[in-house]
Length: 84
Image (cartoon, rainbow, N blue to C red; front, side, top):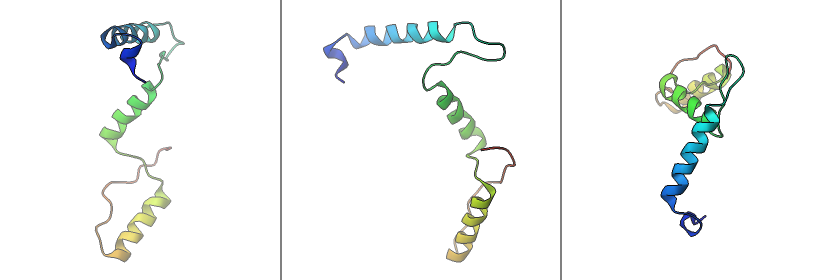
């Protein structure tokens, strides 16, 4: 979409920032927060950058087996026993 055909981009981004701020500051259920589209994905990305990407143990075993068969280094990481 050619944004500047409809509105000044600076005005659009200011209004969008205000909208998202208003949305996220709405009252939420106890122990919850109001999120906009994409917020959960940004949260998960941050977690993945710190903790890595969870891999199912059976897939992890297969990757290690393939690496051994090909004579290459096994993937780096560790198996974490928590839900994916």
